[in-house]
Image (cartoon, rainbow, N blue to C red; front, side):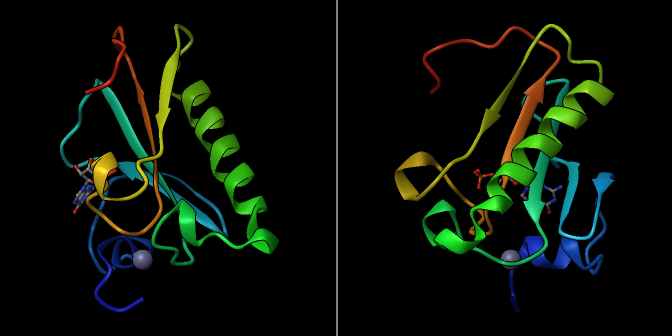
Length: 113
Ligand code: 5GP
Ligand code: ZN
């Protein structure tokens, strides 16, 4: 999608520190990390949020989560990690191209802010 930051990152029009990539998704380091490891995992196809994933594309969600699990393993987050999917304005979603946050490398707190 034109004028979408994460589409541009997926197409390498904007540089990012890629940590994992396959035909359908890409994972890269967050520009403003909130934990020692903070990686964003996105589909290359544009969907604004979870709300826009159609039933017939639900496999994308599993692919993103399993990629997050693999990256957590690669980054040796054996003590645990948190996966966040902000959806909509009240969640704090700022970039409207669906992305999972993978956070690890420190003790997380609950409740989230
Ligand atoms: P959201 O609040 O939408 O769930 O998260 C958006 C995330 O994208 C934020 O954590 C923010 O730091 C990250 N971000 C925003 N712009 C860029 C960018 O240009 N490059 C990278 N790597 N991350 C970005
Ligand atoms: Zn996009």
